[in-house]
Each structure stands twice: as structure tokens, then as C-alpha cells.
Amino acid sequence: MGLPRHWLPDTVEALTDDDLPTDEIATAAGVVTAAAVAVAETGTLILDTAADQGRRIITLLPDVHICVLHADQVVAGVPDALARLDPRRPLTWISGPSATSDIELNRVEGVHGPRNLHVVIVPRGAHPAE
Image (cartoon, rainbow, N blue to C red; front, side, top):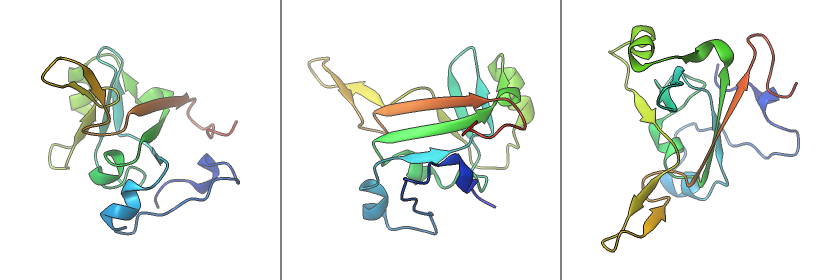
């Protein structure tokens, strides 16, 4: 099924990741995905590679990641999230935009993923354009 096309404005030129090569993913301006569940306490998104979430690589290379969640996908804590996940599926846990520090402890963003992470929460049944 994949990501619903109506999640994107008509002005966005969308690429579908049908095993896109790494260099093409890396040059994309951003990525829009869903998530399996989100944890309010830690600010963590958990993706399980479902069709609307895609491969892990698409959340690592573009500079911007926009994740769309339905309000009922947000749970209080990690135990609540674990109860909703299938442990047999590959899981990607994202707790904010990528950041690390160099040897002089200067903050460096975008080393292990996007520098910009945005989460859009919509009511169940609504679509993000509403």
C-alpha cells in the first residue's frame, strides 16, 4: 500500500522508494513516513518497516524526515510501545534529529541521520492535509 499520496502537497515531486539507489536517496530533499508507534515520555518514534514506513535507509540519508502519526499511535512509555510491536520485525528507534559531538565536544548534526525531524500528529480518520 505505501504512503498515502494525499499526505503530500500537489507541488511536491514525490519519489517512491522501489529500491532506489543510495545516491538518489541521499540527494532527496526529505522523506515522509509513518511510524508504528511513538513514545511520549522519551520522544521516540519506532518504525517497523511497514509499507508506509519504508526501508531504514530512507530515514538516514535525506536531510529532513517528516513523520506522520495518528494520535492513538502515541503511547505514554516504552513498555506500552513494546506491547504494540512485533519483535520479529526489524525496528528503527528514532529519538530526535541526528546529533553527535566531535573530539572537542562541538555539536555536529546530521552524521547518523537527518538533521531535521518533524512529527505531525493527526486525529484518527483525518488525513494530514486537513
